[in-house]
Length: 468
Image (cartoon, rainbow, N blue to C red; front, side, top):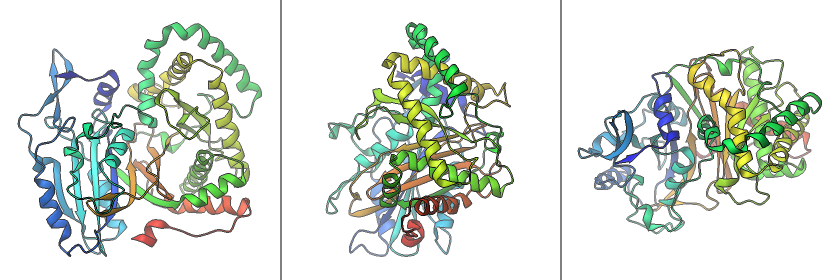
């Protein structure tokens, strides 16, 4: 048996009926070339032959002297974890997202390994989907995405490729999945992180004092006391709404170039625009700008390193209707936070982040200060595969993260790049934030507004509607 880490155990502790702590991914595929009409049914039978899962998919939670451990499940039953389902007619994206929303609302049985996988058919045309759900204690969102892509291939002719639960991590030399950079993990881990960095506190104290002074004079500085009261931070229920959309990465890059900004800056500005429009529809837009918690890399290049990822707070500029002004506010906010972190050592960064976000973590756990929020929304932007991928000849058309809302953080936005697209996944409490699917139109409107402000030609490309 292997004990759970403090962070993994925290996700078990956080879980309750209105706050399931699992994450998931939705993958959309084309049929392989020349595949018969009953391809998905035959494929399901092939996948059922993989009935001996590898770790961690064969592990369930058990307790010894009150402490949780991972233990191999001696009564593993694949039928409980792998399900072959079909969409109701007419088999549109609407029916798919309704299915994902319903399944994502359900907690998993802790007496079994904490994962489920759905093979979904019934689409118009020669398409199918895979919805894979894992408890956050088993695997974080970034690790799940990486594992889900490592089991795929760039070769459309490769066959006999196992499903994720039977994929041997040891078959790939670079398959170690340890980099947790999704926002939910970083915020939760901050609660415990300060205990491991006490020696850095004297240096951090000075940084906190300097930051407090700077917040009084620097409009770009974003502190944990700026987030306004908002419907995004109301109590949540167990009902979920999932919405997803793909956008051309070329459009985002063109906007970034025009404003001398990063892709992440543009993504945050688009999210700010969409949130502004959505909250205006709900007559719930605060006068003060919304604050987002985001994980960012401190690297200057395009590489990703776990020891250079930190959570920062960013001003989304939702108080202004001007898209050009909004992206400048986002740019300045993110740049100021990055520069602040670069003046610290790695140990000081970890302690500073933990110190600044520990109150937010305690608020999520206890709800003792309901009128105070360090931030309003979680936004993660994760780099994904740059080449088209295939699974036993089926081309992966899109991959969408299905995230985890938390009590008083009713919306989680996760963006994943794949090939030439940015895949937006929005997961929200259905009752706290009604009509969340309208955010998809507002995201498109936000992109168009930035294109107009930058003097670029607008290219209307709703990828999912065009493709599906």
